[in-house]
Length: 211
Ligand code: ATP
Ligand code: MG
Image (cartoon, rainbow, N blue to C red):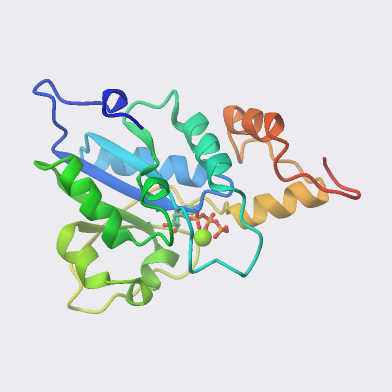
């Protein structure tokens, strides 16, 4: 993303920037509803939907869609949504994606901004397993959003805030399985994302099912 495409305040610099990272394989309405509601609730200038280059905690467990395809889907998802932008900084960094490194990049890109790291309950529960999680907490305000399932319990010394968002029981895992067995995708993904999926022939099933 070039700087020219970034929404900015009148004086040219965002002051409240949200980082919402994910594999986004594919991005779905749960991601969008979360980003839009946190943007509103915390009065953020922008929320960056940051596409993980190598989601190392998922690596090896399944085949992950190429990162440029995931970026194309995220770009399509947010194209018409004010305040949401796709992030390719982790792609540009290369290698495994660590939020601590991403925040360092963002703090150079937005030197006057307060940074917010936005995660769902399930991701927050794994915070202690993140690379340099203390740095993440020092560099940004942790924001946890609801996701169906048990609410996360974080260590008492972790400084975090909760933002209430509509709980949508949608996951990329469920969507991938819908692609493979042909169940409907309607209203779980937005049409611009479906168009990218069709154009790039993603999530094709070789035998049976959709594709
Ligand atoms: P997968 O099933 O492949 O793990 P996912 O749907 O969990 O995909 P991710 O890309 O892993 O999506 O998640 C990125 C971020 O979005 C995480 O912080 C996760 O908690 C959050 N998130 C994903 N789905 C939802 C949802 N339905 N509601 C709220 N937050 C969500
Ligand atoms: Mg997930």
